[in-house]
Length: 216
Image 1: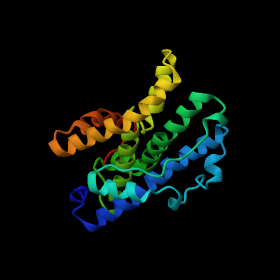
Image 2: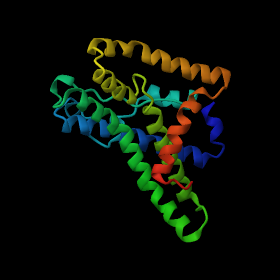
Image 3: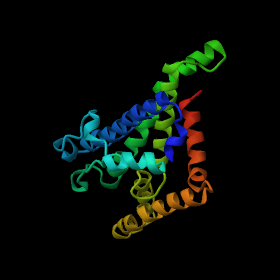
Image 4: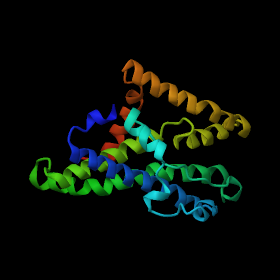
């Protein structure tokens, strides 16, 4: 169970708060960029906000605790209203992971400054909380960059396929199989304990940690 990673109550509470922050920032960023790209759907549905109640998905949150992955409420948009077609869709998709990376970078700064001046890792509840928030934001960004529907990285895959002349309807047909492939990877990883999913995520996480400069 995912709870096994949180033996202390305070760390579990930190994780819950960090989860709310990461998902809220992620989904709000999708909504904001969709609005910037010309679509009013998210704004009309009240998603252009940092209020967690607008972005948290109850089932997705429960799944995160049960099997180690989850999701927020997807931000809807109308592709017909976007200024730049597929490019706008890619920008909307990448806004989520980018917001998590930026959040991690900002919240990792205190620890980086502390390490630079003290040559040691910081201690205390404040730094423990920051470490959890930074780690969760990096993980959420890395997970969503996997190029499988319905994850954000799939939009980049679509743009690449379109540039090679693959028709739009063939690309959209991938959305039927992407979730099944992703679910299959997660289930196989959980049942066999082979670390398949972590093997996919590890280089992405390592790169993002380097980019963020996390010292935790």
